[in-house]
Length: 130
Image 1 (cartoon, rainbow, N blue to C red):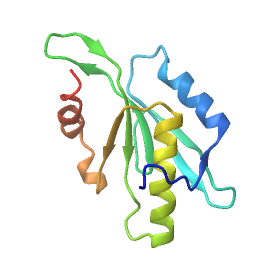
Image 2: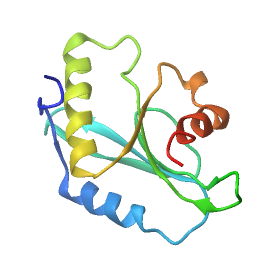
Image 3: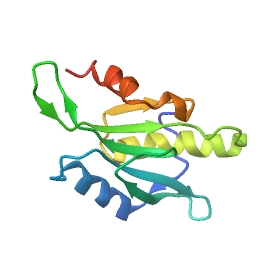
Image 4: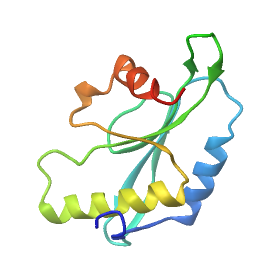
């Protein structure tokens, strides 16, 4: 049921940024961090980083496969803010699904705490997408 729930739309400018980010030419790890603008009920760009921190994250990761092939999977990493009100949790959960759908994101991972977000963790998750 939560997959069809849409609480917040995704800002058109953000969708354009995600599409451009998907096809970027740089070979470094990078991230787009998003947040919810509660007043406008929109998922909007917060910041872009070469290093990540936590909210909604789209992360372009340089993944070297066992056979030395290199790919740059676009990973969507999501965590419900710790200690937030149920209203906010609903807003994040409903917005996440819309963002994943509109951004055409296929590698979607959830973490519970920032300590969970390590390179080893991400590599283990990406190991399923050979």
